[in-house]
Every structure is written in structure tokens, then in C-alpha cells.
Image (cartoon, rainbow, N blue to C red; front, top):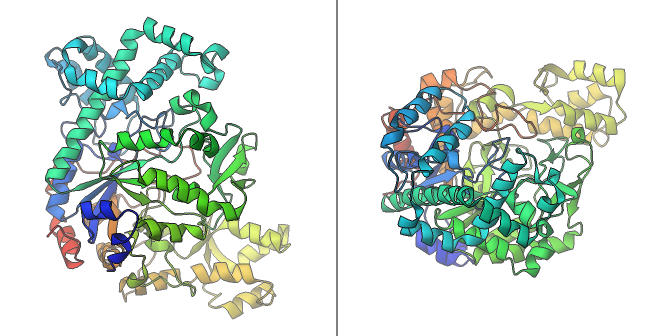
Length: 609
């Protein structure tokens, strides 16, 4: 591995601090894990058991999904604050400076009401937890807690507008700030101070919650540091339109636009996320204080931070707020539009981010990537992400392990994709029907002609995925069936080449000579895939927790369907952001697969030794 890329980069001092060497890690959302001490959902102290598991398996990175407070959809990427942490992740057992004896019965009642051995999180736990936390708070004397006073003093600015936003949201029965009375939606400083004075107890309750979260998460970082396990936080690139940040700093956002992603081969209509894009000119005019303060606060908890939607630093896909929802991100444009401006734009923001904390930045650089992105990543010594199923060469064969970027996190799947076994069962070797229909539309193949073509080329349609007939074994037969020459059918040929032989190409890549039917995913298949991703040149190999758990035969058989995933982008569903792993953390620590994971990391020189 070439260490010079990191040692001579703009983040060299940060790399020296953590060590320039290959590492393996695990990625997870906190809501998906639980221990015997948890109440209804994964809690911050549970991460200490994850640290212990990492020690058992020779992993040295825990990558978390965002822990910021969430809104109505419980998406960690649609936070109502870029500072405030989510209070439902608090552990009653680990609350500071409180007497829990009068509340033991109620805590047991909540544990019984919200059992943890279900496959989906019941988010009613948040409301019930907050009710009980209010009761506990009413017994606390804040004046006797010196650390609380220090916390409030050091974080007064964001705590003030966050607590005010929460108070006003309650006053308006949960309505979005855009639907509040004008005097509250566009509040004056005098009115703000009056409300905070009149609601002092409520204000202090929100301060107290955030102090408790601060203390519990800092304790996790101290524990992980002692065990030499790094914590990577995920900082949402954007923030909910209905958030304390947007309400308090409207001039930092373009409220007439919605952010998203342009159409690509994976999301044929593009994506529309709903969050407003930043007004970078206004943020820059204030010396990027908004960004710097966010990173400064996050550095209390994390050794590294993941820049979500990194390519959005250069330019972001924007859609008019009034565009019909069904069009997703199809009718949008980049902001800024001028490509020559992108590199300087992104570098300037990244320089400010890099100089704002001791945390090592890492980038999520998926999607439609501008040419300047890779150049800037190398210059700064920042890792991107290489997802195994998408890493192909010009011949549409899977790239060799040695072809992965040194400055990358190698992974078999992401929280936005299907799992490895579900990909193999339902997606590998298939194409997206909507994307194919758009290509045909451009070629003037419509109506009955389109239907007839589908019947000739494809043998099935599952969840909008088309699978090629065996009778179309090569490009020549494809062109003959289409009655077109290569030049006319170029787009269809490209789609064909990227998918028809995908299964065979992948089996060859991971070193499995036997043929594996789509509905038969074996532990050997999972093991070979994990071995291959660990062999890559990538400095980090970080896998979702469930991908490691698929090494267990029973878990693989029971939990590898397409709907067992963390998130399905472009959909709003109760299934999103609610998946829970099928074992407790206590069981995880004793699993028979742990020595196999340890051996995997030692064989690939990614262990802690």
C-alpha cells in the first residue's frame, strides 16, 4: 500500500495521529442494535459492547449513521438539528446526577411495552421515553450540577435556538415552522427572549437532555480510545427543511429549491430529498462559522467523520420546490451550473472543514461524480467509497482487488443498497425497467413495439427488474433481435454488457468456480465475498454489521430477503430506518462466527496486531 498519498496530503497530521495502515471496521445505525440494558431501541452505552465485539474480531473502526435528532420520518439524514443528538438514544441506567429509584417500575414497564427482540423498531418509544425523562428531570436540581452549567455556557448559541424551536413546535402542535404564525416563523430577538423566559423549565429540560447525551456519547469515545477503536461519525450534509437550523438561519439556505440527485443507472428518475440546498455565499460571508461550529461540537464524540454526499460540496442537484413529487429528481439542474466553478467551490469548503477540527474527514462520493472529485480527494488524503458490486472496468467486468483506490473505504453494500445476498437473489444480472423504457423512448420504441420487445428480450420482471432471456447470449443476437446496428443500439448494448454476464463475472471475481443459482446464497458465497473485499488495496474495509452476520447459516437463511434492509432510497415507508439485527449484543459477543471474522482480518493484514 502506498502510504505517501496520506503522509504528503493536507490531512497528514490527522493520519499520523490514527496511523497510516490498513484497517477493518463495522458500520451500523444505533437503532439497529440492542442489549439487555436497552429500553426499546439501541442506546448510546450499547456502543461499548460494540467496541468489545470489535476487539474480539480484530476490527478497529465503528462507523455510525447520524445520531442527530430526527423528525417525523425518523430518517437520520433528515435531522431537525445539525448539533442536537437524538434523545431516544439515552440510557436511563447511565443518566448523570439523577436518582432513578422512584422510576424503576416505570422503566421496567417501558422495557416490557417495547420488546427488543422484534425485527422492526417501534418509534413510539421516543414519545414514551421523553415522557419519563420529563418526570425524572422534574426531580433534578440543576444548580448543583457544575458540569451542566459548563456545558450550557460552552454551547449556548446552538442550544438557545434549538430549545426555542422545540418549544415553538410544541406550541404549534407539531406543525412545520413554515405554518406557524409569522411572528414565530420570522421571530425577533425580543420575542425569542420573552418565550425562553416564560418557558424556562421547558428550555432547561431540552438543555438537560442534550447534556446527558453529550456525557454518554463522550464516555463511549473515551472507552473506545482506551481499546484503540476509532469512532467514525456521520454528519448529515443537509438538514431537514423543518429544522432548528433552517428556521434560525434562513439566509443560509435556498428555500425555493429542494436538493436531490440526477437520474443515473440506479435511480432512473433521479432522487428528490426535500432538504433545501445551502446558500454558500451567505455562509462564506460569515466566515463559515456555521460549518466550523458543527464540526467543533462533533469532535467531542468522533475520531473521524463521514462527509455525506461529498460530491455535493462541488455542486448539488436542485429541483424547484413546486415540481410535482412524482417526477422525483428528473427535472433539475446543478447548483452552481458552471462546471469550471465546481472544483474551486468544493476545495474552499473542504479547506474550512478540514481546518475546523482534529477529526479525519472521510467522503461518501457515490452517485454522479464530477471529474474534479477524485483529484481533490487525493490532494487532501481523504477516503472515498468503493462499493464492490459497482466497481467494474471498461469491459464491464469486476475490478481486481488491486485496482481499488488506496484512498477508499471498500464495502460490499451500503445502508442505501440491498444486502449482498438480496443483491445476488434479485438484482445481479438484471436491469431497471424504467431506465430501459426511457432508452427505448429515445429510440422511438413505444406502445406495442415496446411490449413486444420486452417479451423477446426478457424472461421475467420482479420488482421492476428485468432479467435477460438465455436466448440472447451475445451482442450479435441482441442486435438481430432489435433489428438495429451497433451505432443505433449503443445504449441498449451498454446496458446489456453491464448486466447479462454480471453473475458469472462476480463469481469469477470472488474465486468461486461453481455456479450459484439466484435463490441459493451460501455461507461460502458470503465468506468469499468478504475475503475479496478485505484483499483490496483500500486502506479501510468497512462492512455493515449484517454482512458479517450472514456468515451465520441460520441468519443467512432467515434474513436475506430484499425487504430486510436499512433504507430504500426514493421511498417513504415504515420499513425504512427501522431494521433491527436478529441478535442481542450479548449474543453477538458469543457468536461462533467471531473467530472467522478475526481470521479474515488477520489474513488480510487488517487486524489490530
